[in-house]
Amino acid sequence: MRQLLDEAGLADKVAVDSAGTAGWHVGDPADRRAVRALDEAGYDGSAHRARAFDPRWFAERDLVVALDGGHLRELRALAAAAGAPDKVRLLRSFVSAPADGGLDVADPYYGDDRGFATVLSQVEEGCRGILAMLERDVRPAG
Image (tube, rainbow, N blue to C red):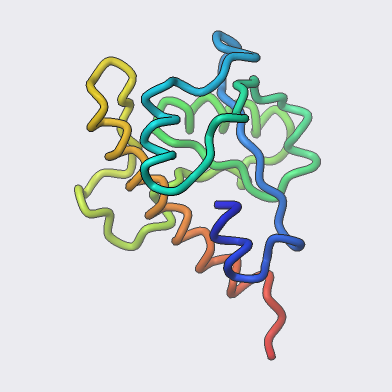
């Protein structure tokens, strides 16, 4: 997402961060297979460290993106309690017609390396959809 924002000239208008819904891996680097898939696609995932989502962030963020239906339910429950029920969306809901027809980003953890490449493709697709929305809503008409 950061790279897309930079290429679109919106990096100074939109902040992007990442967190999980649970704290199991807080402080850990990304899975080596994820880092390899990112590297092969030209991204640097080496500095990533896991952290857990803090419900207080709803007050500071305009959009919280979930990758699958389970995370969506968890985040929407937190959002409702924080008075921010409309801030949570599935990443692939920003794609008009996901190639595989589903809205969940696949969970590659228990599979092989190919699963991480699939996830990267799904995330890139969703991020392009978010960028399209941001270009309409954030970029001033000109």
